[in-house]
Amino acid sequence: MSCYRPLPISFVRGEGAWLVAADGGRYLDAIAGLAVCGLGHAHPRVAAALATQAQRLLHVSNCFQIAEQQQLGERLSRLSGMDRVFFCNSGTEANEAALKLVRRYAVRQGNPQPVVVVAEGAFHGRTFGALSASAGGRTQDFGPLLPGFIRVPYGSMAALADVAADAVVAVMLEPIQGEAGVRTPPEGYLRAVRALCDQRGWLLILDEVQTGLCRTGRWFAWMHEEARPDVLTVAKALANGVPAGACLARQTVGEFARGEHGSTFGGNPLAARVALEVLDVLEELDLAGAAARLGQRMLDALRRQLADTPGVRAVRGRGLMIGVELEQECRVLSHRALEHKLLINVADAKVIRLLPPLIISDDEADQIVHTVVALVADFTGGKTAHVDPALS
Image (tube, rainbow, N blue to C red):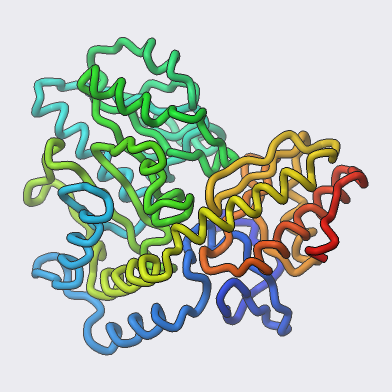
């Protein structure tokens, strides 16, 4: 089915932050498989862990204890401050688990029709619960969607405080809205949401499928404001390309009982072993610190060099999650970037989204900036854009 409209290029292998096409052309990857390949491509330790585990044991099902899964659960719990973990295969599955978990909590608290507050512009996945919690064109033509959601403007504490429904059980947010165009909330927003949830007895669900695992310069984006959630979802970068996701929860939320939820492949020996290796590399190389430093380097350079370029509305982001918003639709730039041997993504029609691997070098970060500035200047006609000669 024609779901994707892929760009006219096919890659045969990868090397760190670079992908190699069938014709031998090398492309600098500034999207990392949509924030999946945080360690880049063909990382030797990931490849070794995958090959070794594949020779030992791929899958046994969750009818049996899985040592690698237990180790991964304990590791994620320590990193996140959560108490319980459910393993699945993707972000949308993790968010489905989160929604089921808080509804279960509400029903057991005597709330038979629980409501979850979500944000305008949100994207939590494509299965029905996650889709119903999302917004925008992705929800069209798939109705009726599931009831039980209230939408408020993203980043508005006033709108959230005005929600008075007695049936509210939780607030579900992305710390940064990726699919909506790398939309960042006001400083202190997550901390204020956490405080309001505490005041009203609501749970806080944070969808860190895209922002989690060092992408924004901390292990999880909520750590920038110490706004620890009650339920946390992760996926994408968890196993660097091997499908893996997780829904984590604090003890106060409770947990699924036997048979209440499940996943055939979730947390199998292969995915869990690779994820453990990914976490080891992220920690040993301090890639959260690298993302913070390189992300700030790129943000500063993009803001400086695009400051006088007409047609540029904003440059924003955190760590290595960066958006350059233009005044007009710019989907064509994904195609044009191929001519410059760069891979970028356009989100929300007008935002160049940059999600490079966390292992990029300073020179590679500068090359991404140099190429994006040139693309934007040419696209908008903004010949006043300052291209730093040191980056050329």
